[in-house]
Image (tube, rainbow, N blue to C red; front, top):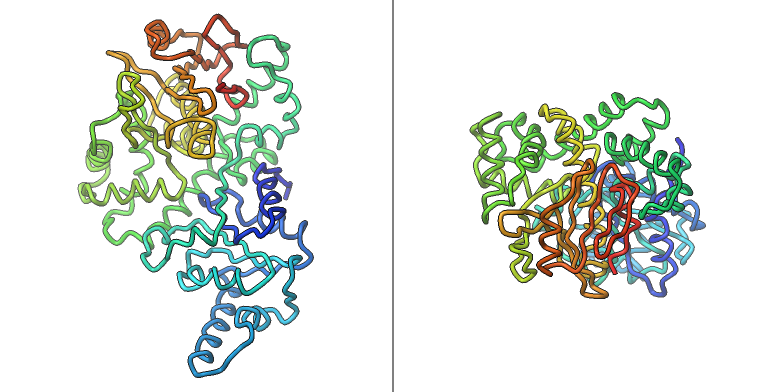
Length: 452
C-alpha cells in the first residue's frame, strides 16, 4: 500500500521529543488512518514495539494476563513492578526503556485498562500510545477522565494539502499566490485537484482508491462502505433507536438540513428539524431524545461538526451548535448527491463546508481564531457564511463563500458599517486579488490565508 504522508506525524515526533512526555491518546473518526500512522511511527522511531489490539486475539491474551496478575495481587502475591510483569507475560522479550513503545489499540473496549493508564505510565520508562475511535467510551460512565496523565492528538481525514501531496502536487500548492499574481497553469492545476477532492474527500482508503483507479464511482463505493461499517458498529450502543434504516439515513437528513439555507435554528430546534425530516421520510420511531443522542454521537465520532451563530455581528451574542457540517468533503458530496441536490447547490454547500473545516482547524484555545467553533453571522436581513476574529490582532473578518463570481452583498454592508475590519471573499472561480480591506481568494487557497 502506498504511504500517505500525514502532518500529524510531525506532531507525534514533537510529543516523543518533549521531556517527560505523558501517555499519548490518539483519537479521531473511524478509518482516518490512526492505527496505520501510529504503527508506522513506532516502527521508524523505536527499537521495540509492543502492539495490543483489544478487539483481536492480542487484546484477549493481554486482558487474561491482566486479570491473572490482579487476582494474584488480591491473593497476597507481591510484584516489584506489576506493570512490567504484565508486559513480560504478554511479551517475554519486552525491554523497559525509552526505546520501547507500547501501543494499545481499540482502547474503547476496556474501561479497566484505560483507567489504569496512569499506573502504566508511572511504573515504566517505556512510552505508551492509546488509539481507538472511542465509540462507546463517550457513553460508558466507567471510563474516567485522565487529562492529567494524557496528551491528546486528534487525527482527521486528509486535508487538501495532504491530498495534494499524495498526488505529487504539494510543491505547486506551496507556490500558489492566493491574491492573483501566480501563473494561470498553477491555478488551473490546483483547481482541477480541488474538484477531485471535493467529490471524494480525504479518507485514506478513498484517496488510495483514487490513486489506483482514478474512478470517482469506486471512491463513492468506498465511502459507502465506511459509513456501513460505522453504522453497524454504532448499533452496539443505541438500544433506543428502533429503526436501523432510519438511523442509517440520518446522514441524508443532515444533508437536507444543510440545503435549507436557514439562518441557524432557534435553541433546541436543530434536533427538532432533524427529527421532523427523519420521521417524515424514514420512521416515526425516532423521538427527540434519540435524535439528540444520535447527533451527539455523530459529533463525538468525528462525522459531523458544529458551527455557532453570531447575531448582528455582535461577538458577545454567540450561540453554539446552531448549524452542522460534515467533517469530510467526500461525505458531504456523497449525501448531497444522494438526496438529489442540484450540482450548483452541491458546489456551494461543499465549498462552504471546506472553509468550515479550515476555520475549525484554526479555532479553539491553541488556535489563531477566536470562538470555540467556527460561526456564521446575521446582519439585518442578511447572513454571512462565517464571521471570525484573529486572536493575535483582534481584527474581525466577514467571510463569504461563493461557488462562482457572485459578490457578497452582506459582507460589503458589514464592512461599510464597520462591523468587520476586513471582508474575505472565497470564490470558486477567481485567481484572487486585494482591494482596500477586501481580500478575494480562490476557495481552495483558504489554508494559505493568514488572519492577522
